[in-house]
Amino acid sequence: MLDDFYTTSIAEALDFADTHHWTRQPPRSDRARLRFLASRHTDLAGLASHLGTRPGLIQAIIEGRRSAPGASLHQAIAKDVVRLWQPRVRRRAHHLISTGHEGMLVHFKAWFGFTGAAGSSDDGRVRHITERLPTAYAAQLFQARYRNADEGELREIIADAVGEAYFNVSPRGRLHRVGLTDIVYIEFSY
Image 1: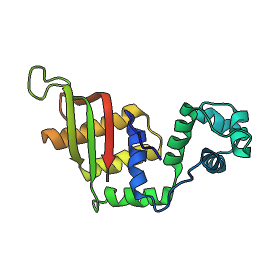
Image 2 (image 1 turned 30 degrees about the horizontal axis):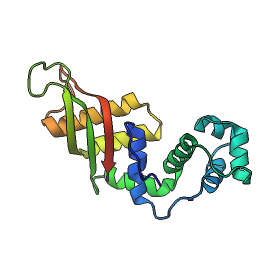
Image 3 (image 1 turned 90 degrees about the vertical axis):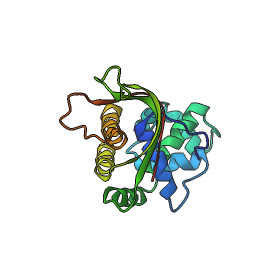
């Protein structure tokens, strides 16, 4: 569905990781995907606004008067379907991870390190990191995602989690915080 999926967004990376737990595939055509999305939104105007287009274009695609949307609308439709498809299956997978039955792995390339330890090997720089997240942070990350937390809050959770796992220090109570910025890409697997 998203063969060339590549993101700097933590929320989108979490949504994409959820696709590996689906028990059924989502609709394949943009028309069927829009019908699915229309069933999840209160009105077409709200859906169109969310997707960054006009309600008339959404209506035309759903009714079959217009065959294919542009590339950016196609991508927006696919991402929104990924975000909303099989919520119970997603919650079940999140529960297993949050209770320690499964693990969560994060892989990213970004500026990462302590914000105040200038000159040390722990100083911030662009790093490629693959790390297993502690269970408590995975649960915290999912809870933040459920309430649609912004990218800044999600980034702080990931920075603290990877900081604890990578540097073997707890971020709580430290003078120097671990920072995660300038994400080139980020992926999750669980």
